[in-house]
Image (cartoon, rainbow, N blue to C red; front, side, top):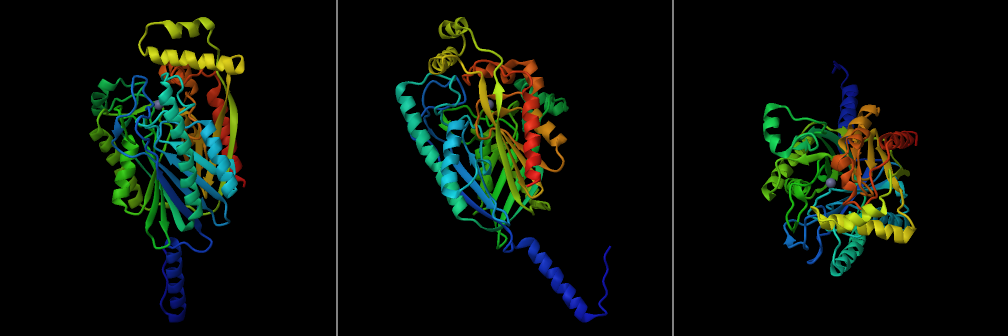
Length: 464
Ligand SMILES: [Zn+2]
């Protein structure tokens, strides 16, 4: 306990002034503080664009139930090091789109590749575009033309949102906290219809990640101007023919209603083997959105950890390999065989034949992006692909200090199974390579490669 005497009025007055000044400094940003800017654009597709995410969809979207957004959160640390996080209400993103967006931001704002992080919410009520989930379905020519036009427009909007955020940096305080939500359930270990009973009995199986990390930005007047919320769960409450941000869209909308003037962003964690439950209706998407918004508000209501210090970023691509190429007979069989989701298998065969035509043989490598950020003492790792929950749990356990792990970042090329999930196979470890238009499962050793490089990049940010 600290006690102080009032026997010396002058000394007390000085002490009082000091205490008040320190208290103000804790709230109001100073000249040497962080600066933050936000930007946003609606990216809801026009009529006639095809949807992605589910192979069974056999026509373009019917309309819009909720707008899709690109949002950007840009910041500069006290010495002017800048970064921008871009979040998208989309199912996926390709390395080509990310490369073009980053090239434009480098030209306009001299931002390095490592300083730009792009994360998608993986809503399945979003558009298909070139290069993403290419084995899902063969689209008619008109659908391809519209998808191409959408993709061009999307890239401009992503750059505009980031450009606006970077051009409107203003003094701010940044703080973080965490809460939890439990509507995400391991989908490999719990048959959907058994989940309510298992949940009630406390017998749900398999790993999951209930954490809800929250980053809050307040401006010089103390007003909340931005909020970043994350959760590790497939954004697949819905499967209808309307554009919709799903539970992540509902959480963003709800929090923006509760905190007028704040831009709320959602970044998806490592939720590739986690599904929301229950699911199937807009009401349930809203219910999960409210659950997430409540978790964020609980984190906001408690004392948060203020971000001090500097920003640093590191990013690299590592080479991941596919275990084998399909034979000509396997490709032919996929083209001709009567089987469930026949269009999906035909699209996969077409993707394989395209690759043979373009490259002479099907490439067995993919340049896989890994990114690490450090904001003061808070570290972030952003991994490409649909990353299973094992990665977040392992990286956090092995990291010294607080770490948030995002999946679905910078390039969503396929599922990224852990060694355990790869060995077990099934959808996330094997058969999802069909809709993704990939030759076969990843080679064993994938987890160690990704984890080792993640740690290396994280430690590189520490020493800068
Ligand atoms: Zn998925």
